[in-house]
Image (cartoon, rainbow, N blue to C red):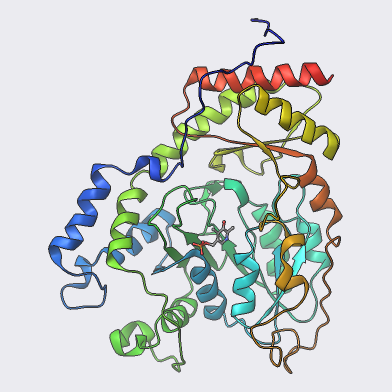
Length: 419
Ligand SMILES: *Cc1c(COP(=O)(O)O)cnc(C)c1O
C-alpha cells in the first residue's frame, strides 16, 4: 500500500462539493417550474383539474413511493410535524417523546401543537435509544417521534414494539432521510405518520416544503383541516364528517411542488451513488482500531451522506478532526464546533427554560398539563458523550474513487499519527 508522506497533506486538490440537493438542479427542474408559469396556476386549489396540480401529483408520487394511502403536501418540514401531531389528536396536557439529538424543529412542533416535549437519550446510532424511550413514558405520554437523523434509520422495531405496548402514536421525522428504509420498509411508512422536509439542506429540495404521509384517514383529514383555515370550503370531501376547527396556512405552492416533483425523481439514484461512496470508504477504514464507526440500524436503508466515527474521548475527536482538516478533508466534530448547534438539546434554550410566546399560557403551565417534565443542559449525558466523541464527514454523490481514497488515506494517516 502507498505510504503517505507525513509532511504533505493527503489531499491538496480543492474539495469543491456543494449541497447534495441544489447541485442536482438542472433541466428537469427548469422544465417543471416553467410548466407552472406557463399554466399560470400557482395555487393548488384554484380552478382546473385536480390531477393537473403539481402538489396533487407530488402527493401521489409520495403515496406510491411509500406505499401509503394518504399524503399531504405542506410548506415546510416543521409544518408536516405540526399537522401530524394535530392530526393524531395530540394537544394540551399531552407529552411527546423526542430524541436529544435532532433539529430543534422536532421539539418546537410539539410546542406548537400545545403539547410538552420530553427529551430522551440517543445511543451510538445517534438516533433515539429505545430503552430511554421506555423509561420516559408517563401516564401523559401520547406519542413518540423517532428521528432518522443524518439519513440513518432509527431503531424502528424496538420503538414500534414499545409504542404499541403503551398505546403511543409514532410520528417519524424523516426530514433528513427522504428515500431511506428500515428492513425493507420506506422510512415514513412505518409509524402512524411520516414527516418530510424539502428544505435546501435535505437530500432533495423544493426551496421550502414538506410532506405528511399516513395510512390513517383521521390523521389525514385533521391534518388537512389544520393546514388551511378554509380547507373545509375548498375540499369538503377530504374533510369528511369531521368537526372543523381553525387551522393555519401551511399550503404548498405549485412552484415549490413542481421543484419537489422534479427533484424527487432523483432520490433513488442519489442514494445509490452515496451508498457506493460510503461503502468504499467504510471498507477502507474498517481495520483502523482506534476509531469506531457509528452503528447503523440497517445499513441498506442508510442514505449514506454522512460518515460518522467515534474516538475514545472528546479531546481525541477534536484533535483528530483538526488533523483531518489539515490533510485536506473537510469534517467536523459534532458537539464542539464552537457554535450552539441547534441539533443538540442542550442548546434548545426556549425549551430548557420553558419559554412560550406568552408567559400566561405555555404548554407547561397550562391547566390541562398534570405532568412535571424537567429539563437541564446535562440531562442526557450519553448523548453529549457520543456527540463529543464523534467526527463527521459529509459525503457527496459526485465523489469518485479517488476522492474516496483520499478520505481513506487521510483517516488512516491521522489515526497512525495519533496512535
Ligand atoms: C430540517 C428538519 C426539520 C424541519 O424542516 P423545515 O423544512 O426546515 O421546517 C425537522 N426535523 C429535522 C430532523 C430536520 O432536519
